[in-house]
Amino acid sequence: MDIIFFLNEAVLEGQHYTWSSVLLILIIVGCLLSGIIHWWQSANALCTSIFITQVALLIVFYIVNVKEQASLLMSGTLLIWVLYLLIESHKMAYIDDLTQINSRRALNEKLLALPKNYIVVMADIDHFKKFNDTYGHDMGDSVLYRVAQELAKVEQGGKVFRYGGEEFTILFFNKQWSDIEDSLEHLRESVQNMKVSVFDVKKGTQKNVQVTVSMGACESQSSTDSEQIFKFADDALYKAKRNGRNRIELKK
Ligand SMILES: Nc1nc2c(ncn2[C@@H]2O[C@H](COP(=O)(O)OP(=O)(O)OP(=O)(O)O)[C@@H](O)[C@H]2O)c(=O)[nH]1
Image (cartoon, rainbow, N blue to C red):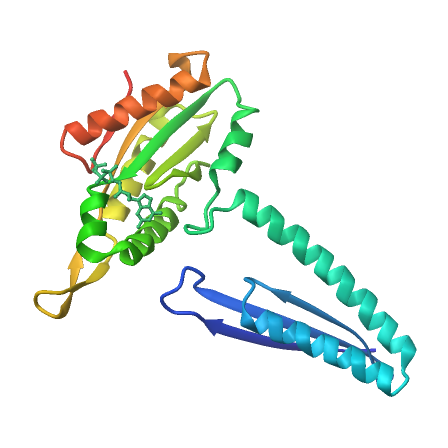
């Protein structure tokens, strides 16, 4: 039995999916093709063309009367499509489409099983309305993606979710404020240091602009009610905004 791998990697610049791969595995028994397994990172035109190729092969097998091969290929294809639909529906529910980080639904599920000690951090991009108004909604989307990806690098076991709009939630389990304070500062700085290049309409050239986030945090000791903890973290976030933005406040 021979197994042949084809790896096709394409970079989709300017899109939220930074890369897309397709792996084709042709399983050849003797000199007969007995199955095709394919895997992809994100559904796109390439996947469609692979599916069409499979269907075409299926038809060819029937025409040349290699029924055994055709039925094997058909079962393989059906199995792959069922798996694909399962993976995609899971992704649609739990991964935010724009930012590719955990969705609000994923956050809601995490909140159903909170440990005794946890910390909620709410993070919000500063002056984002002005950014959208100045550089356009598409550029705003791209900044949202980049900020989310930067926040997702959080250390100390933090988990990042898109809460909604330009707001994110970071959850830390079984940590004290003193354990995570430095990591959050580091995260805030890394967003501030991101190189964001925008088009200056007046000058007709590219220029770099700074994007910052404000954060508000609350430890679980402040209340037995998780909704209240979120409210306190939100209050701390608005304190950070009032105190000049690009800073972190902890609910005392
Ligand atoms: N591009 C883009 N913009 C979004 C998205 N979701 C929310 N926004 C925008 O985010 C902006 C939020 O604006 P505000 O709530 O006024 O806050 P802000 O301008 O960031 O000001 P501060 O929070 O006070 O610093 C609004 O203009 C929304 O349209 C999105 O998915 N994409």
